Image (tube, one colour):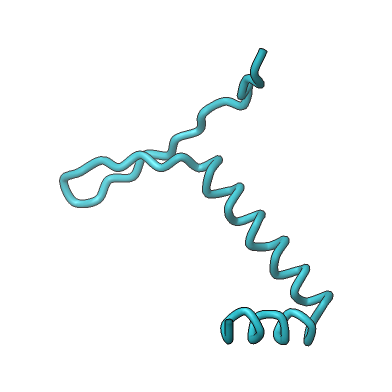
Length: 59
């Protein structure tokens, strides 16, 4: 049996002009957490991440 997502769906509604927009806030929170983790990882590795990024751009 497959995994079931038991987290509640959180949607924030925003009015932009005459339109109402729904944003899944849980998804934004997950992406923000991922970005924060990557920043922390880069800060720990400092120069090594810079060198790795340059080598990936050259190939």
